Image 1 (spheres, rainbow, N blue to C red):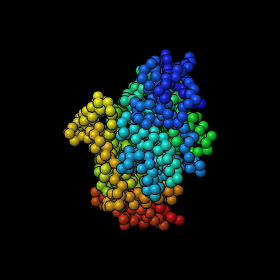
Image 2: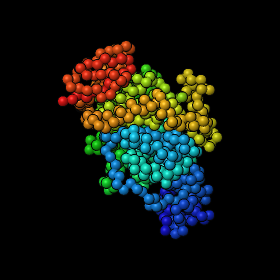
Image 3: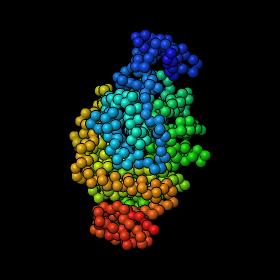
Image 4: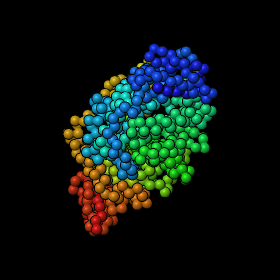
Length: 579
């Protein structure tokens, strides 16, 4: 006997459409409708008819084989044969994350084809993959941030069983899986939730559309909808963590914020399952509250992204000062980020034209993720240029060295490790012609306002924009990609083999910059790092006792022994104090 249940307080009459039949559902005073069907089987297609209308997908649909406008498909999670019984997760503090987009990670663009490359990630030393959103979104290609069926893994990637095979294979390779989840908005195409009930309120809006109703009338079932969805990825798909998209766009004035409620539910699942589970937030508020303990007035999340570290590092290495990079001026800001996490921590932000952020005292570095690139910072550029298209070989290595020796949890963006030549562009596959035209036009107008010729801006709806963004794995075997890949391997191995580099204590981090000479020196316990992005050659005092040894340098031959080091332009050296 299968029980179908749906929250539809806006409807006066609800029917289950299944096997060509329309079965009346019983409603209660709270707007929940239910019916039992003894003939329903996994694989059956079904939908809900509201007040005699055409069948709509289940708001909690676990599979949409025909896309966002098709019928839902029944899924039996107990039928999958997992082989990861011995997997219990790992602490985030010692992790090396790798952000991937399933559709462009391989030529095949599916969960199954992604499995074939997991060995390379394990060989690199990656310990966790962070998967860009896979919840069902319009069409066959997209970034995933306009998903509308939050419980259903995208059909073009391989659906529910494809995701389970992928997670199972990741665990077999010793890789944790973090699922990117979007709870600040839903996409416009295929979003049928407003027809069922007050999932959205009219009091708040985000940059991307209506905000979910987390604190208005009848918000209880909406909050439960999101919390249950988070637990689905962790429980039914065995994911090890969540990355919550743009939580600064979530407005909730409740005494218990939805993020706190979600984190508490995850902690309860962690305790009952015996698995280590992470909840990582993306936020641009420069506010440590999401990762502070609940007892200290925080939300109790595991970690959050640190955009200030990225922005400071990118601005220093490229010289870019447009947009949000206007707040950052060079290596001095990189040094501040390494020590204090936030650069804009209660001071005036020229880009925002107001005071922004607050300090983050007392929190370990492992509460924050650090990165040289991610999908946003690459894909939101007009031409999707990666750092490898914007930086010299030396500066690429400096950026990688600082990310992988920083006090934060490092995250790489797919292909970064070999300086992939393919861009990562913004692409969509909207089938609604009005929406498709609006997206294409909006992209052109957005960047044309910055001086880009309109005909040079790739059309998100063009399939070639998507295909150009796919990684070319074969180029790893040719120069200069092979040498950069070796640099990343050695850096990851260095981080994992030296306790000073996974020590989360921020009071053990000392960094200072000589902006006039383009020099930065960082010390973390017995490990020291020095880099030079200025002109010519400079001598840097390493302030280290005799017995030190050079662990890694670019160019090779740069030696930190002897208490000082001669650093040519665009160079970096890492050393260890011995004895």
